[in-house]
Image (cartoon, rainbow, N blue to C red):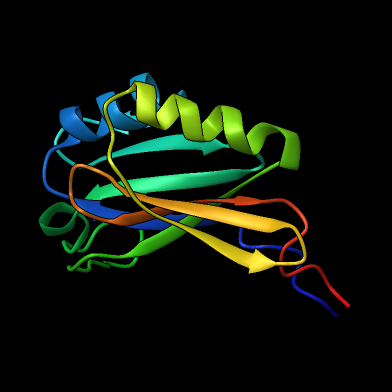
Length: 131
């Protein structure tokens, strides 16, 4: 009985329109769900990125309430040959690269921030593969 993957993950943001513009227009993620004043959801490869206004998702409703705060971290995996194009895409969008890191064995990643200062990372595929 194994978990297959993390299907979705969540960030709490302060401005849905700004978040939508960043993830859809700058990063190219498809919007797959949206409720004004509450959330916007994106397709990120085979995963889903949920972005909520914390105060709205904290309220009891159909689903259990949840919320969070602070700067979180997510990593997006790309094929090795797409790593440099992704890095150039981020730079060309005027998004500052915070750091690039060499993980050894030919694996690199780079870090940057979203408008809410969440730390985002693009990492080459193959890292953390099952042994």
